Each structure stands twice: as C-alpha cells, then as structure tokens.
Amino acid sequence: MNNLHGILLVIASMAFFTLEDMFIKRLSGSLPVGQILMLLGMICALVFALLAKSQRAALFAPAAWQVKPVMRAATEMVSAMAFATALARVEISTVAAVFQATPLVITMGAALFLGEDVGWRRWLAICTGFAGVLLIIRPGLDGFEPAALLVVIAVLGVAARDLLTRTMNSAVPSSVVSFQAYITLIPAGALLLTFTPGDAQMLEGVEWGMLLGGSLFGVLGYYGIVVAMRVGDAAAVTPFRYTRLLFSILVGVVVFGERPDALTLAGAALIIGSGLYTFVREQRLARQARRRAAQLQAGRATA
Image (cartoon, rainbow, N blue to C red; front, top):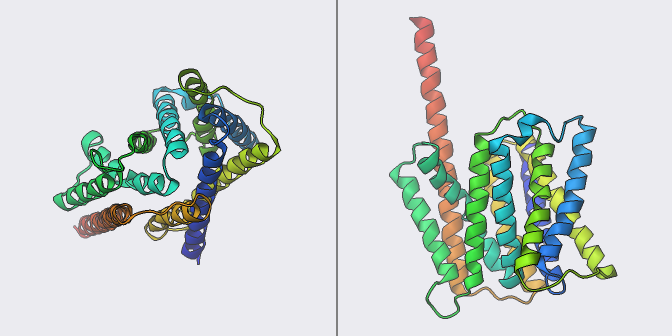
C-alpha cells in the first residue's frame, strides 16, 4: 500500500511540475523570462523559509553554506536559467523529452567523477539515450532549433546538482536546501534581465494568477516527490517520473497546439527506454551487492 501511495504521489508531482512549466511558458509570452524567475524565486523561497522555520531549521547555519551546498545552489541557478529560457522558445514537449535524459547523465557523471562502477551495458544504454536526444534536437538538419541546446545545459546543471547532493552533509534539512535552490532564481533572473532583451513590467490580474499558479504547483511538486521517496521504495516509484513527458505532450497538444513529429517521439522512446534499463540494471546490481554482503556476514558469523 505504501508503494501505491508513493507511485500516486510521483504521478501527481509530475503533473504539478508540468503545470508549473505551462504557466512559465504562458507567462513568457508577455513577461521577460528573467522577471518570471525572480518572482518565482521570491515566492517559493519564502514558502520554504517559512517551512524551515516551522521545522526549527536554521536557514543560515554554517553547515548549509559550505562549499558544496553553495556549488549545488550555483548549478541550480544555471539549470533554471537554461530551462526557463528553453521553455519560452521551444515546444514544451521537446523540452520535456530532452529533459528525460537527466538520469542517464547522472549515471555517467557518477562513473566519471564519483568513481562508481558502470559496466558496458549501462554505457551502451547511456549512448542509446544520447542518440535519442540527437533525434529530438537534430543538429545540422532542417527544423533544428538552437534554443533546444539550452535544455541540454539544463540537464547538465541538474545532473551536477544531484551529484553534489550525494556528497553533501545529509544533516542539512531538505527545506533549507530547497530555500537555497529557489533563492538563486533571484540573481539568475537579474542576470537574464540584464543581458537579454525585454524590460520588467507590471503584472496584470491574469499574470498574477499564472505566477501564483506556477509557484503553487512547483512547491506541491517538490513536496510530493519528497513524501513519495519516504513512503515508497525507490525501485517502485522512480520509473513513474517519466510520466512527466506524457503530461507535457498532453499540455503541448491541448494548450499550445503542438504536434510532436515521429522523430521526436522516437527519440523520447529511446531516452525513456534506456533510462528505465539503466535504473533496472542499477537495482539488480544493488541487490546482488547486498546479497553478497549478507552471505559474507553469515560466513563470518559461523566461522
């Protein structure tokens, strides 16, 4: 039953994140992306600051502002700038499809920078997933959208963020880490406002509604993921993160009139298939490692 609750929470969270993306994309039609990021950062950072206070967690404790947490926040800033700009310029279904390559990049980064053992099967899956990304972006071919490369930058930033998270002090509360992530959107938005076209504007009633909707669904999505990982097994709930692509395609078709072509769908299938294979393979290897450790412990106990 716990796994079922976890799965439902993950699916709901993916829907919430998609709705957040939808509001950001709609807002980008009338507001500069930098202004959107700054306002989202202010609202969501305030929410997590209040949450941290309710948990009696110190927002500015020294442990939370050492080198690694600050580096993590910096990667969050880069990925947010790239992702939001891509949302404004590229179809939401394309952005979501390329973004599904994030777990593959994390696996590759863990092998290259954390010394984790990645066998040839997972390397083949990673290459297959990257081939799917190339099918979607199609560099050098007709229909190539240079702004789609911003999604790749966002993927690299998120992967770096998650790899840094693995090496951070786990005593830092999630609410504080989330506050750091959202507070970086303020300087990120300021940079975009400074170096990209468009001036900040006063928001009208509908725009305020979309901004608050994006903030609400962003916070709900994050909260749902945290709870899902606590109540369900990772092996059961993680594969359902890919439902975000389905929601994004649905929103793209219904709200933005998008029509993903065959190459985009084929690329998305390659990315999801290789990602699921990599995840299943990692779970199998983890079970084998636990089994060997248990056998070794049993052998020592009988010696």
